[in-house]
Image (cartoon, rainbow, N blue to C red; front, side, top):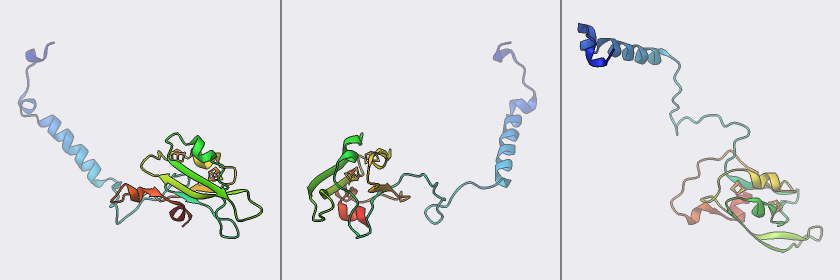
Length: 147
Ligand code: SF4
Ligand code: SF4
């Protein structure tokens, strides 16, 4: 049967059934458990495996664990990591990162750098509020990453 041949009753003519159906859905959600979070006043719990901003880990002496092997920079699909290696003042370690930068604007938070690191020198935190006012502020240097 084609639509134009269908005869509508008075309720259908004034769209009453779909309006009632819509009101029913509204009422059902009105009394159901709320899922909206009043961000930023209220923050959701972060899952343990969440990958947020990076952190460079320190050793017992308070120095960076990183030995500037550049595996993280090599594996990074976004080429977001820049490392400049230098001879380490620690006789036990060959090299250290004179410069270590992560360009957060390029990073896709895949976690490959963390997986690749043989020294567990880099980790990803649960920090996700990364907005800033300039592009420069989103290139994290070694000092920022060691905090
Ligand atoms: S999380 Fe992924 S994209 Fe970001 S710096 Fe690490 S390897 Fe590169
Ligand atoms: S963070 Fe790890 S993988 Fe990257 S340069 Fe340092 S030691 Fe190597």
